[in-house]
Image (tube, rainbow, N blue to C red; front, side):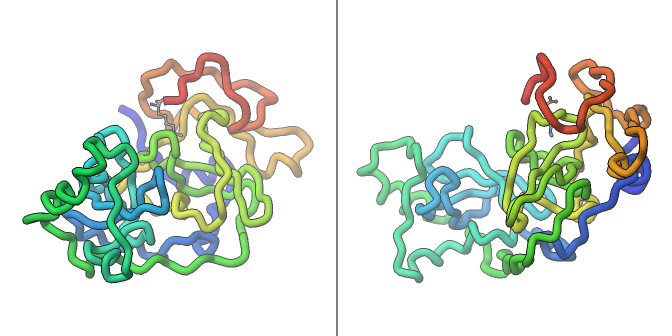
Length: 265
Ligand code: MLZ
């Protein structure tokens, strides 16, 4: 059967190092997730960030919640850490003198919003304030270095957390490259992004860390100082994938450029 992905082996195989914990805006010990499916809370609308809306917990994964905005469809679910500043107990908005807003794409007539709000909150199970954890402070300065390994949310498939490598660093930003996917999912983000985690995060939260893609040849991080670039073809830790593995290509940088015909989903 498929061998399980193991960071210790993988770091050795790729001769790379894990990005230090203090680089991340994450708590050293992941916050406990006490939420239950069905509980309601207030959440910033990811598609309209000036709006605070009512959201329902649709699922629980590790230290994250799968959320759906009340009055929205089921195609725009999003995931937030329990210590995210994007979520708060019901009542917080009003206490601060704000007004709860209908989500972008509210499925009913805008005029029905006040009544909808009353109905959705009536008899709702509200997540207790103690379940919301304080967001960790921003790490300063950006201490990521090219080649460091991490775990990162795949923004195209945000329920997935995947092994990744810092591909570039610019000011406060880092380029997150996903191991084994040749650039199809890579993105720039701030070094204090809540979407990136230290190596070992998923094993602490109980999240299923995805294995690296198998469409890869991995350049050892030490390759730059070696006379000939040394490559490791991943075989031992491959997991079953729907797509046929693309053979490793020589002379290709990892995580860059899209291979022909690779689907991004
Ligand atoms: N459905 C996709 C998932 C790819 C996830 C990649 N994450 C970096 C596939 O299997 O192609």
